[in-house]
Picture 1 (cartoon, rainbow, N blue to C red):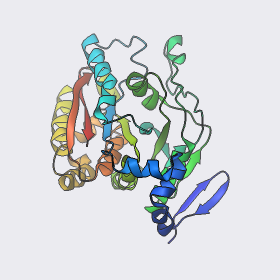
Picture 2 (cartoon, rainbow, N blue to C red):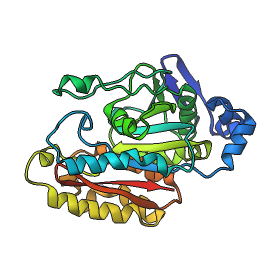
Picture 3 (cartoon, rainbow, N blue to C red):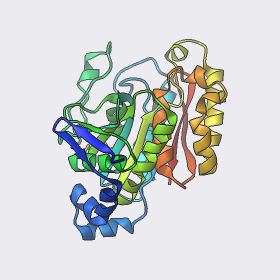
Picture 4 (cartoon, one colour):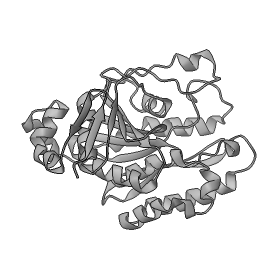
Amino acid sequence: MTPKTTDAGGATELSRRDVVALGIAGAAALLGASPDEAEARSKEPRMPVAFLPHGGGPWPWVELGLPKSETDSMAAYLRGVPKLAPRRPTALLVVSAHWEQRVPTVLGAAKPPMLYDYVGFPPEAYRVTWPAPGAPALAARVRLLLGAAGFETATDASRGFDHGTFVPLKLAWEDADIPTIQLSLISGLDPGRHLAMGRALAPLRDEGVFILGSGMSYHNMRGFFSGSGAADAEAFDAWLGRITCDAPAVRDAELVRWAAAPSARACHPREEHLLPLLVCAGAAGADRGALSFRGATFGKRVSGFHFG
């Protein structure tokens, strides 16, 4: 069966053979590089993949009552994320917990606007800017790869960067000068489909694209704002750290069954903030995970991981 890619301009069908036939030259054309440049990139070290905690709302720029030790630690970690990469990325691809669509959907705007997807904060929270350029060619490349893996896909040409993207990336790449796109989660939140989505995106790592999952390893809003939840967060975080850093075959199998882990549902009543990690694990392939960050938000343990 031929996978389909759809957008407002109509449907286009692309077979797996079409995508494979693109090879280095096709990827180069889509990403704005010459075949020689793409060939050179393919011989450079692969880009890593990273799962980032993005914290609560616009926390770096407004006072939320978080302990300074927590915010300073997370901010320092996020500012250091560029050091995970062996060189400057050609582009950033972010899977944000704050965007769900029926099919995997990519931002298609050349200049994505800001999307302040939070309410009830002081005026300065709505003056934050992070004007990174979009990457329509990369969006097309993402759709080709996902289409070859059997996913129907779509492009959203008007949506902007939500806070799952602009909060951590404004700290990590303050100059906002690297082309960036977002990729949505899939409604229904099936863990196996998100792992498969990540596997389909793995070739981008050889094209200089830094794949980032933005979520939280603990995300229970009632737990955040009550005295409960710390023990659950510690139990789940211990399991998550062990599994994410295990052999890839074990890691992937266990992450798909994440809901059976200790305190899993107490930490994630709804799993949208965990699934970006599964996309990252899929894109990691044979690379083992490593713990990048171990901190807290409102006293609840949260972690960040990288692969490669």
